[in-house]
Image 1 (spheres, rainbow, N blue to C red):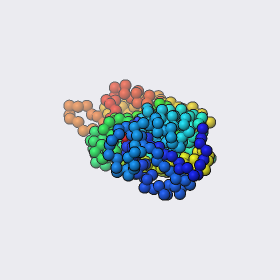
Image 2: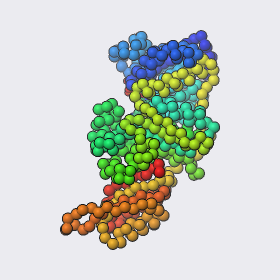
Image 3: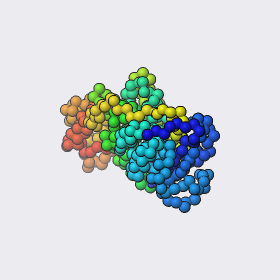
Image 4: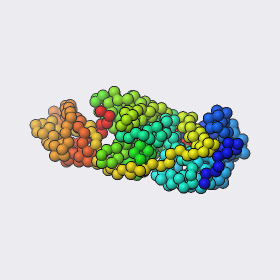
Length: 438
Ligand SMILES: NC(=O)c1ccc[n+]([C@@H]2O[C@H](COP(=O)([O-])OP(=O)(O)OC[C@H]3O[C@@H](n4cnc5c(N)ncnc54)[C@H](O)[C@@H]3O)[C@@H](O)[C@H]2O)c1
Ligand SMILES: N[C@@H](CCO)C(=O)O
Ligand code: NA
């Protein structure tokens, strides 16, 4: 049940979590209280901040110490707006649901929860007539979800393609620009505070896959959860892959790709080579960038900081203003839109291109056998390049065969590679990567 709008009573805001994002939200809410009041049309009052441990010195946030509580369950029952920046599935989900049951709108940055169980949150928001906003959950500060949910609501989105994980972009950028190996680049990212002590969620692509699920759900009006997303991280990307990309005048990026085709929607996260001339190739360090292509709008690009306390808090504050305005003036923002209910396709149905570098024997008939494997799977070759590998007199002659395909289904391309691995003339696969954006 939504409380009656009351312009005279402040909008009561409860914050769950005072970590990197929560701390920045608390500080900025206080620093900009006057501007927030003017933008909302009524004042905001922080009624409490739930923390895990009491007694820590939080004087840097400039807040009354009595606002801190370890009883989040109680706090969510006395707020109009609950801001969840704890992260993880539980207790975040239970606290959000409890907040909604008590009539609070919710702002969250929690992509993991939204990708795993977004529909439960949306259903609860609809049942209790409250807002659920989560701009910070994807690409941090970059306004991206509001454009998809609201600005492009009249258009037909075809593609969302982007770099949505700053940590992995930093690692791949360092591997490309300094020649660092994967482990060294991860250490550098950890030293700078980009990568966590346990970088699994980032480097294995879980974080990007959660964001891809959220983007695809909004873009295609279809429920897509994290498990629907084909996910490959960057742990297998080698210096040889980076060098192979450089020879092609390409760069390796971890891409989140959401596409609408005649058959349904395809959502995937994997490393891919993109041409250096592609705008996403110029996205350096820990920045994020996302391309959106819609029927009427054409191509749009969004660029900025996808992580960090203040940048993420900027998105959270924007959401707080939006939902607080609804409290003051009435109304609700858009709820879940799943009317299109498109089928979510298997990875094998995705259409892509492969770059394959093969270690082969250099003798007559080798190229014909390799070409036959492609033909068997109806995969057309775009370019072939051969590099001789210098060897000793006692060794048989060897070469690297570098092949770039035309587009084909991922199923046909991966079957071709499996067939190539069985050929006697193929000693091994040096490097294998999808090519996107050209
Ligand atoms: N850090 C970023 O750059 C960034 C960017 C976008 C989204 N996010 C998302 O924002 C959320 C918060 O991230 P963060 O970086 O601030 O994490 P963080 O670990 O710095 O902060 C989380 C805080 O929640 C507290 N906490 C844990 N359980 C609690 C409980 N039961 N009650 C009260 N407090 C509890 C922790 O003690 C910690 O201080 C996550 O969902 C994350 O995915 C973070
Ligand atoms: N770990 C994430 C934080 C923002 O979601 C990243 O590196 O982009
Ligand atoms: Na965002």
